[in-house]
Amino acid sequence: MSRLGIIAGGGALPVALAAADPTAHCVAFAGAEVALPEAQIERHRLERLGALFDALRAAGVSRVVMAGAMSRPELDHSALDPVMLTLMPRLAQAMQGGDDGLLRLVIALFEEQGFTVVGAHELLPDLTAEPGLLVGDEVAETTRGDVQRGRAILDALAPVDVGQGCVVAGGLCLGVETLQGTDALLDFVAATPAILRGERRGVLIKRPKAGQDLRVDMPAIGPDTARRAARAGLEGIAIAAGGVVLLDRSELLTTLRDHGLFLLAER
Image (cartoon, rainbow, N blue to C red):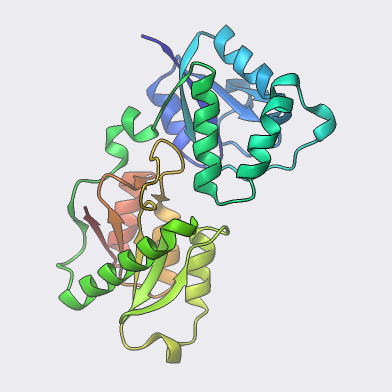
């Protein structure tokens, strides 16, 4: 079987992937915060992407998974290797748009180099949820209406490549996830005056963008998401079945249960 290469970012997902495949070759970009021990990863500069491709091949890697949070780096143009020099026009154009377009290009670059890009959910099937109510009491029809409203909002934003989450209460959108992420969205909602929120507590809706390639940047929730949702006064979280990563699943479900929040997965 071909060796797996893990392009690691922050968070628990790269750790889970490395634990599931001890033979995997783990790499991270210089300066990136990674939960894996430094002794377990090989650092590379993004400016020298050609050297990364060569190193992966030398390690026997033919499959690559990109996992964990990664920020857009500032490039030192004086350090670009020949491969990056040829790629810069395409990268520069992609970086002017949203994350989805940039990540599609990253996938294409690895595939052009002969690597097969796989999704974390393909390697760890338990990362996502089957349809149904995972935690909590039966969800009221009025709350399901907020979930549908949130789905409509995210579908409307998908063509402009903005966000994978929003919060809706009583049909009102209390916030949309932007570049700052879900934590910032929930903190913003927590600071929203009660007079603007109406009588219903609200729901976090988390779904991939319409047409998104789920091999990279699949939306995720974890225990901290549950805690922040509780602090924001929400009654639950609704996710796309098979389309959202459940980080630290056991702790996530326990945290939701402890705070009286539901978790609903829908197609």
